[in-house]
Length: 238
Image 1: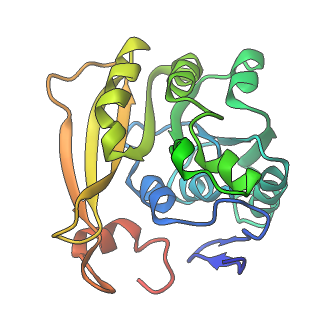
Image 2: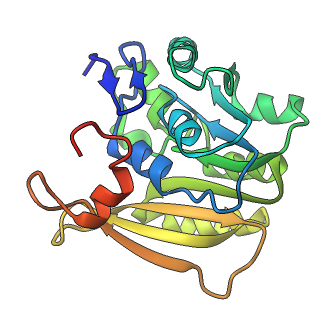
């Protein structure tokens, strides 16, 4: 898994990142709406920088910032940005989101995050991987508190979360005056359970958010049309 991951318009080095390229991040980067033409975008907990790079490919935003706490991942993210066609629009900050929020006056039209969401029972012997994966480094409550402070008026905040956390996330978001606008339930196959949910929030309260459903594969390596349409601009062999 330490090989560079080659997309159609950019390459991501990942040998120094605890969390490698995965379906969750790429799906979020492809699914997040750009209908409001964001001029500024922030990726919280960027890891390799893949979501920020997707945002750079998809959008005309002048400013695409990323925050990464792990020093190795921060360096790799910065190098991935520098090697991309959009290096003049991308910048990574080495900080926690709490530090970043306290020190920055910048407001963003769009914020995206593939946050850590495993609890103690899954802990490994790899501290960097645990840091990237576990909610104790970035509790959802902190994430939404920081997001509302960094979000421009009319801005949107998109995350990918486990299905089992969905109700909890909506409750936490509401406490911070953020409400779901779009929700996409993701299944691996037609018969599998929903494990992941893509969620988009804003200050605007909708009576009922748009509910979408996405199935990745009909069966092994036989991808659904809806999945292919979503990711075809990124993956080389699609």
